[in-house]
Length: 407
Image (cartoon, rainbow, N blue to C red; front, side, top):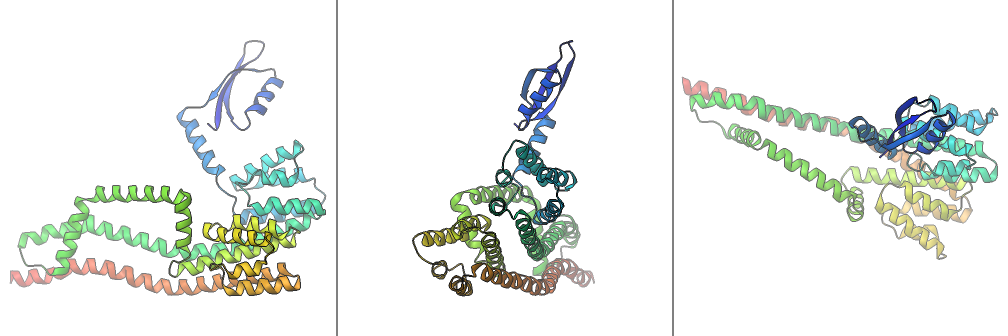
């Protein structure tokens, strides 16, 4: 349960009731006691509104703040910190003006931790569901070096770039998905609501129908008769797929297969490599050791197959090997990555080389998205038009046959 129902009374017999968050229950009870109220009942809220609020909080607790909101927050935080505003006051101010509920709630919890004496980096690390692991690690390095403002600038620039590339990638995926969903809905509507009316009309004349019309009528009759069964099978299949994908084996298999998808697989691979390279570059420039940076990079990869490859690189590095040598053995990383990393290790400028890797693959993502969108738009129009056109023609075509049959 995420919420508790309480009832309290004072020394004069007055009563007060309400709902408090489970996470803040101890502090809320203490506040009531300071106001002269004593809790006489405290139990989980099992009412329907309480269950709805609890479900919403659990869903929000698993969400991560968007890269855009994180970039804005760190830009503003650095500005306030440079102006001499205390860290906790700056965080409270930014929490009150944030439009992201997840970020605002996390910042308020961080402010409470700071008031209790928790270090800033630990307070952010304790909110790992809302912030990527790079945040806590870099803030810890900034606290150690006394360059918290510089670390904030690095984090802001990092999240701004991640947001820019991510938005272009979402556009490339959202557009074709939206068109296909709309086309599916239109064809389903034609088969269920429009085609059956023409079928009744054709049956009155008992005239021979062309094979495309017979095929469309058969599909329409099948969909109308077994619609609920098809919907149930689709729902069960979606639930089974979701459960399989949540398993360790299923998640690894799905992530590996994603990298090998036609068209989208190479695009996803470039996106992941760019994110990993930029994360490593930001961490190394912030003063973190390579081994610690690899651990964090494996967490931000968001692909189990790539995370496993990075973990093997970390293991090889601990055993005395080189990063570029292990990268050459990992098929998920193109040869260009290992060659640039080798140059960076030899010159002692690994972070700078990783920035070049990230810039190159981010640029490749943007170019691929632009090219793919330009190709998909006419292709999808042709495909959707052909499907709808076949359904319409198969209905109109028999009209001419019926006219000849009547004559």
